[in-house]
Length: 217
Image 1: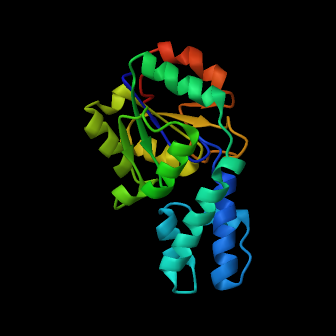
Image 2 (image 1 turned 30 degrees about the vertical axis):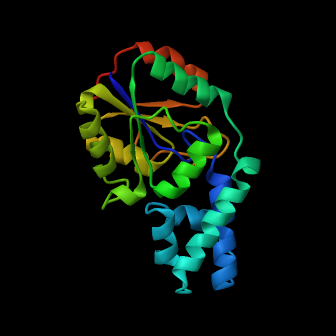
């Protein structure tokens, strides 16, 4: 294994609560309606911009998008706490010589806010956001882009994510897939497509880093 590729929300950072808060405010302000967390989760796939444009009834999309980012940025530091276990994991992977990537449905703007707030800006070799793909997860386009940019084959990479869409994308890209439930908030409770491995504790994942992974047939 040469490369470790991560989803972001619910995998590398417990950002889902601030995402939900910002979306709730947008729909309340512009559509005068309350949306549930489950309704918001069902919208996931496109970037925040895409979610708003596809689901908001009010057509003041630009204003709605700006409100989303305003709330996301202002509330991030209070709601999303630094996770020392995640930080240690990333540092250890980097020290051990792994190439690191992110494939996320987030827009680059919100991802950069999160990476900056959490001090993770300089660890990743390749980042593919929802702005960078035509087809979001579960399509494998994002993972394939990372593999190409890192110059590694699918059998040399592992992809970690917290949602069905993550695991399905990984399977379609033919990489080793790991489902994670190691943060307080994650998207999928039970995976409908079984990952090659599932971890509920970051520290359980550390010993596996020294074991070469081979894709299951």
